[in-house]
Image (cartoon, rainbow, N blue to C red; front, side, top):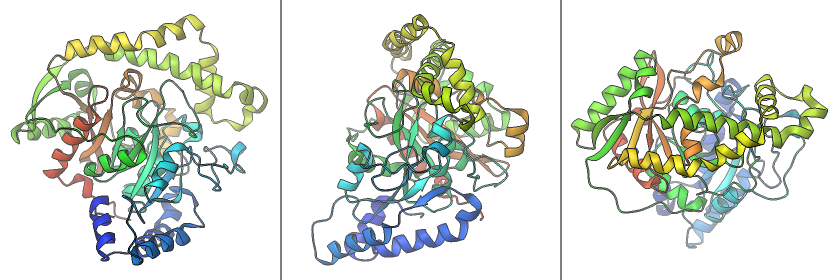
Length: 436
């Protein structure tokens, strides 16, 4: 839906829009388009009942909770009580959690309910996310591992969705599918009840159309990020290595956005370089693969046949790590972060392209064996450093979305989101919908 959650909530409160009508429209689009996109794994059989309960509360004049009657779409990595949760792997095809994850329960407490479970790449260990297709071109991948959530939003089959991000899994599909996604500061939102990829790097975050909806959702998810808004323009470090290493067409789009933000008085750009990013990405890989191997070791030994190639590569890499390298990588995190803060000086944010390129074709992705490493090149360092990072749609190349990544210091999620809002006030890329 091309309305913000805030406007939908206001329409529900005033009686202009009903929860059952919202659900009917979503289910209609899912029936019409999801057989082609395949963003959902499961639709909640109790969704209609939940919408009717919300509607009854409204008619009775009860005080409405912030998300009353607004459904959520939940990545299939995140536990939902009584609803199939497969983690993207056949070994868990019969898994029905007995309790909700902390983040889902918080959103339910805020008045939301589960519409359905969106597809994830197996155990969140890749960016292809089969069988989900990119709504802008079904011959292309949607990105991952939160590809189902991004595809459902792009195709107007969701109002908001939950994703997880360990090395870019919210921001990669957000960029490829042209929606907005936040990886919050590490630890800000509970990961209890979320199948782990890497405990030290996992994040849960909101995926939406409108950046302005993120503070509302974050508060409902468990953390209020509203704060005093900075005076504009703010100093922004444009990460030169990322900009210059991107596809020239992507670089041109992102540079035009930087120039526009500058001319509108939103940012004062400074081109910025640091060796810390490359170092952080390497240390991220050590921690990530080590903890992936720890999560899956026993299951992998006995049931290797049930794992995808991308999973096997990462598990095997982790099994070859040594404890000294892992502990060194863990211990270096805060010192590298503090060093980066010193280098940034008065820079309030960093800006990069979200991805170096556009969504690749599925056939090309499978044939060439493109490493997922190429697609986390601008992502994983910020998971390692624990910094909030927002992706907003900012343009297109050959009709396919391009994302802008806005990164802030730890616990300044509000600043990244505010700049995302300001950009969306002067652009309409977040309102684009693929021709289905």
